[in-house]
Length: 250
Image (tube, rainbow, N blue to C red; front, side):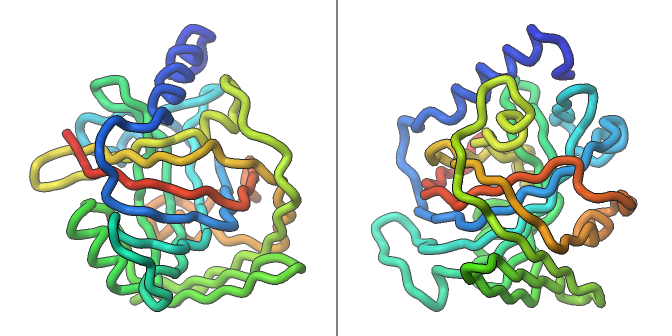
């Protein structure tokens, strides 16, 4: 676990190495905008019980972390293809935690990724083996902030997030909690071939304080966790980054 200085330093080196631009071809371009990261401290043993063989829970200050992250997907397109307004822009909200694999790679494990574009759901499930879910979602983004709603298909609960991001104030410093939570460039996915690793590349997130008027923890309960019964333990936002997506590897 990442509680001793040497362990934190080793994990920081691994995270820094993962954000270097890969020396291989990417397959997709994306832009992620108006991200809101709502994090709760969680019992590492409880998180570990939910992970597939080959993954270990990452901790910081003795705690695992669960997150709900609503945001906007913009300009999504395969490499060499233009973006198309009706299929390149949509909404997404994920539930995630932080893990490392047997090779010592530190990344993200997704419990769910709600999305309001059926084509995106099919593509991510088929080619990236990620647990995307169909959802009815809507949003407005004005000078007063973001009003974001989501209702997963087949459920009764409608989640509402209202937040305003302040101007960005810099990037996460290595060794900090923000660095641990945000500087993640690898993801893991279960596939018929076993556990696979995907990589993204983007500039470090420009961080912004977030004024949150309303939030929901229902996505955590849909993932099988108990309701935390408290506000998020850590809140941060980002105006967004341009992203390159790379193929899954073993």
